[in-house]
Length: 95
Image 1 (cartoon, one colour):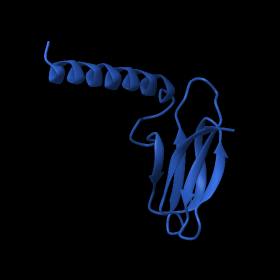
Image 2 (tube, rainbow, N blue to C red; image 1 turned 90 degrees about the vertical axis):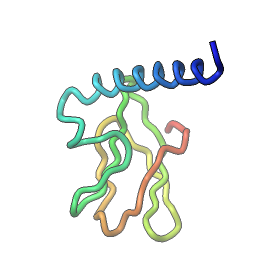
Image 3 (tube, rainbow, N blue to C red; image 1 turned 45 degrees about the horizontal axis):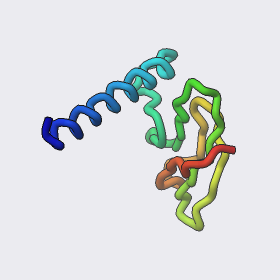
Protein backbone atom coordinates (compact mmCIF):
# COMPACT_ATOMS: atom_id res chain seq x y z
CA UNK A 1 0.00 0.00 0.00
CA UNK A 2 1.39 3.43 -0.90
CA UNK A 3 2.30 5.97 1.76
CA UNK A 4 -0.39 8.32 0.50
CA UNK A 5 -3.08 5.65 0.93
CA UNK A 6 -1.87 4.80 4.42
CA UNK A 7 -1.91 8.48 5.44
CA UNK A 8 -5.36 9.00 3.91
CA UNK A 9 -6.65 5.90 5.66
CA UNK A 10 -5.27 7.02 9.03
CA UNK A 11 -6.71 10.52 8.60
CA UNK A 12 -10.11 9.13 7.62
CA UNK A 13 -10.11 6.83 10.67
CA UNK A 14 -9.15 9.70 12.95
CA UNK A 15 -11.89 11.92 11.49
CA UNK A 16 -14.45 9.17 12.00
CA UNK A 17 -13.33 8.63 15.60
CA UNK A 18 -13.49 12.35 16.37
CA UNK A 19 -16.91 12.62 14.72
CA UNK A 20 -18.26 9.79 16.84
CA UNK A 21 -16.94 11.40 20.04
CA UNK A 22 -18.46 14.73 19.00
CA UNK A 23 -21.78 13.05 18.25
CA UNK A 24 -21.89 11.58 21.74
CA UNK A 25 -21.05 14.83 23.54
CA UNK A 26 -23.29 17.03 21.40
CA UNK A 27 -26.40 14.91 21.67
CA UNK A 28 -28.00 17.50 23.95
CA UNK A 29 -28.32 20.02 21.11
CA UNK A 30 -27.64 20.59 17.44
CA UNK A 31 -23.95 20.68 16.48
CA UNK A 32 -24.27 23.96 14.61
CA UNK A 33 -25.62 25.73 17.69
CA UNK A 34 -22.67 24.83 19.97
CA UNK A 35 -19.61 23.77 17.95
CA UNK A 36 -16.59 22.41 19.82
CA UNK A 37 -13.89 24.94 20.63
CA UNK A 38 -14.15 28.71 20.25
CA UNK A 39 -17.19 30.27 18.61
CA UNK A 40 -19.02 33.58 18.59
CA UNK A 41 -22.55 34.80 18.24
CA UNK A 42 -23.37 38.34 17.15
CA UNK A 43 -22.85 39.53 20.74
CA UNK A 44 -20.97 36.92 22.80
CA UNK A 45 -17.87 34.69 22.66
CA UNK A 46 -17.85 31.11 23.98
CA UNK A 47 -15.59 28.08 24.32
CA UNK A 48 -17.24 24.65 24.15
CA UNK A 49 -15.09 21.94 25.75
CA UNK A 50 -16.48 18.80 24.12
CA UNK A 51 -15.45 15.78 26.16
CA UNK A 52 -16.96 12.71 27.70
CA UNK A 53 -14.21 12.20 30.30
CA UNK A 54 -15.07 15.13 32.58
CA UNK A 55 -11.65 16.75 32.19
CA UNK A 56 -11.01 20.40 32.95
CA UNK A 57 -8.65 22.08 30.47
CA UNK A 58 -6.64 25.29 30.21
CA UNK A 59 -7.48 27.55 27.27
CA UNK A 60 -5.68 30.67 26.12
CA UNK A 61 -7.98 33.61 25.39
CA UNK A 62 -6.97 36.35 22.94
CA UNK A 63 -8.68 39.33 24.51
CA UNK A 64 -6.91 42.14 22.64
CA UNK A 65 -4.41 42.75 25.42
CA UNK A 66 -1.95 40.28 26.81
CA UNK A 67 -3.58 36.87 26.34
CA UNK A 68 -5.09 35.31 29.44
CA UNK A 69 -5.59 31.69 30.47
CA UNK A 70 -8.74 30.13 31.88
CA UNK A 71 -9.63 26.74 33.25
CA UNK A 72 -12.83 25.46 31.63
CA UNK A 73 -15.06 22.54 32.53
CA UNK A 74 -16.90 20.32 30.04
CA UNK A 75 -19.60 22.13 28.11
CA UNK A 76 -20.02 25.74 27.07
CA UNK A 77 -18.19 28.56 28.88
CA UNK A 78 -19.04 32.20 28.23
CA UNK A 79 -15.84 34.18 27.63
CA UNK A 80 -17.27 37.67 27.24
CA UNK A 81 -18.49 40.06 24.61
CA UNK A 82 -17.56 39.06 21.06
CA UNK A 83 -16.16 42.58 20.54
CA UNK A 84 -13.68 41.95 23.40
CA UNK A 85 -12.55 38.41 22.47
CA UNK A 86 -10.64 37.59 19.28
CA UNK A 87 -10.26 33.84 19.82
CA UNK A 88 -9.48 31.03 22.26
CA UNK A 89 -7.70 27.69 21.98
CA UNK A 90 -6.70 24.65 24.03
CA UNK A 91 -3.17 24.90 25.45
CA UNK A 92 -2.67 21.15 25.82
CA UNK A 93 -2.85 21.27 29.62
CA UNK A 94 -5.42 20.18 32.18
CA UNK A 95 -6.31 22.04 35.36
